[in-house]
Image 1 (cartoon, rainbow, N blue to C red):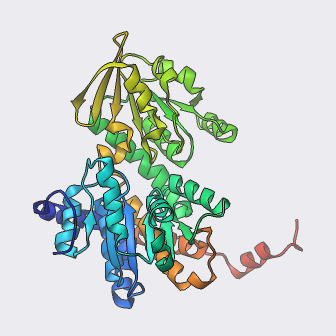
Image 2: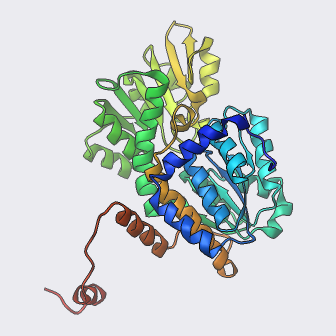
Image 3: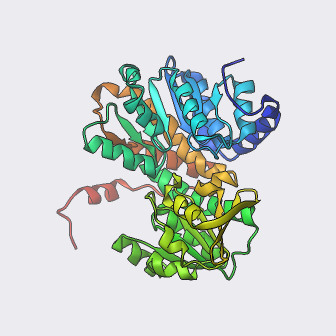
Length: 419
């Protein structure tokens, strides 16, 4: 048995069945898996992965192992682990997993160190925690590292800041920025899975409610679309004037959070920044307001301010904590302010993660093959990989598209021909 720290190995049979179910919706990754098993492009490569431990991630781990890699997996969020899947990876695939849903802060970081004890050549991050720990506390590992990948917007922001300040010590592929990732994962994945988490946690009716979304990036766009589709009146708060205009043109109300706080029934933050909802906003909220986060870190909601304002608090449902304020109003915080789509639900649908994790798998191969020419910067997924994944996805959906004719290609490449 491989070294591991999971909740219960007896959960493995259920995890294996759920992993089989998700595989049915991941045809692109499945095709890469077949290729990897034959070609072994990752032979001899050690990979430490800090990702949400879900059935979709399980399929990615299996793909990497079949490609010849030695893999260890830990969670990128204390509440995002599916314990049955973690057990299945250990029991049926021999992959060391260090992850338990609901683990405390100390255990979370102990698990990260356990994954890094592999002395990886490649890091896979969803939030840049591996990179941060390596650069601050495990610098002895840097000599073996070829490069890394980053899955989410928040992590890419952190890594680009490191590169900008000249402290990033190895190259990173920003998987998040691939069009086949953020156009679909962030928009359609976050849009659906966030509502799924809110409804599972609360069983509230969204139709007729006022739904406030902080941030109108790709995640905010997807969430607004889905909330409106469920019958909610959507209010968007923004700091970027271009995104604010886009939200207005898409048919949503746009207000400062100070005004939206008085109106909202449900609030969701998807900004990647801290204290987007703070004490001043809590003081204005209606009795019964529901507050959730779908950004990577729980700092988007100023939870310490809410705790300080509350005269009492209790867990009233799974993943729902009731805070009673001095004037008797009650505010409900979902999933400890962590990613509600993973805390209370199952994260993004497998069909969406198919493309995201295809980018991860092919991005790692690109890193290894081009290591000698890469600097300590954050690089986009190469356009040819992005397009190949899109083509593979269309093929699996039974969709065909046109191709440019030689005449059309020539026209696009020249400037002489005008009207």
